[in-house]
Length: 25
Image 1 (tube, one colour):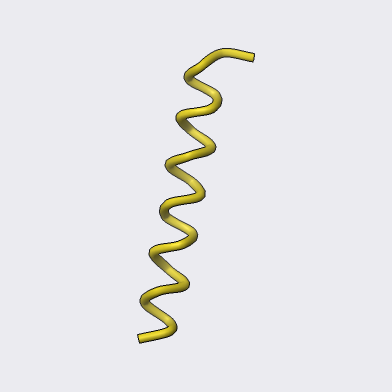
Image 2: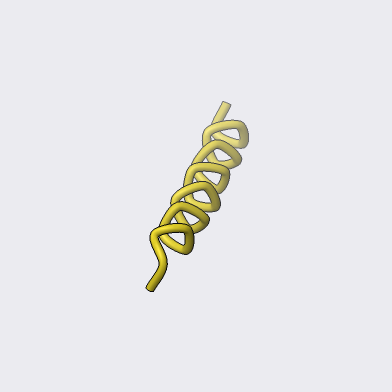
């Protein structure tokens, strides 16, 4: 797999975590 694919996954994961933190308040 390309390293770019891993980076995309990391970005998506970080965004997902940020959303959870926002909801958690």
